[in-house]
Image (cartoon, rainbow, N blue to C red; front, top):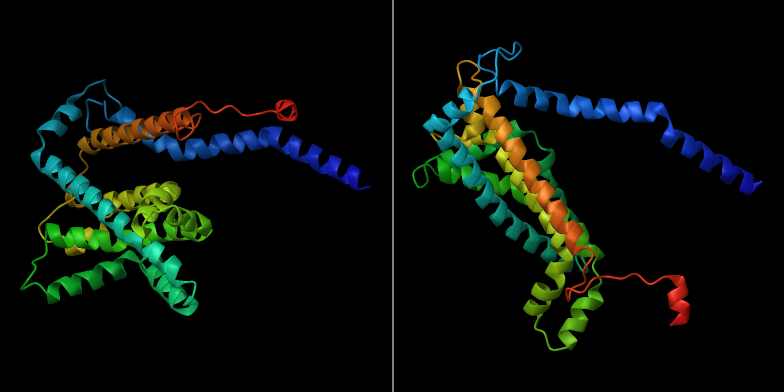
Length: 293
């Protein structure tokens, strides 16, 4: 009876995986996500200003993009703030996650309280966070006027929680014996963390850093309230009186850069996944070879 049930479950799952409804569903999801991006890319080469009527092929908007100093300055502000905020928030978030994991052994209540406080900026509406940060910076405006620095501090503040929630679970899953073994072999605690723990945490750290960079690069509401006269690319687009096809060209370039970066990361990962830490090619032993050994 059990075997028959297992066969029925396997057969039903195989039919579902190979069914045309499943394939159609995947195709529709892909079209839903990428059709607008493809439309932007196509109309970035439109000679006219229309976003629905393609007149003729032209690169005029890319030329105008390179000549638009205000837009380039806004893009530079966006990239610089995103990079600095990502680096700082990744360092703070990683160290904070490691510290919370160590404290959680003896102070569970305190750790849960800190984690709940850390999650507030994530679930809190952006407008509330933006207004609260604006009020804070207005209170210290005699010392620090709102501009590039306040925008950077705000981005670090709301990016750090994303790094913590990515790294903290990975720290808890680490084998504590690895750190103790490294220290037994003569490594100091700092060396054990740097040479043993951080390499194990690398995927989670990279994931948190990518999320922090995305959130910072994409932010508008908080930047608008705390940036003063400083404009990032989101504020620049919002302040346009009418739609400018230069935005299509900029969006196309950003999308292509992201695709190239992720393809490069995937190629690098796939190449190095076949090698061990000493650079030797991995060779998996079959059961027959294992018996011969």
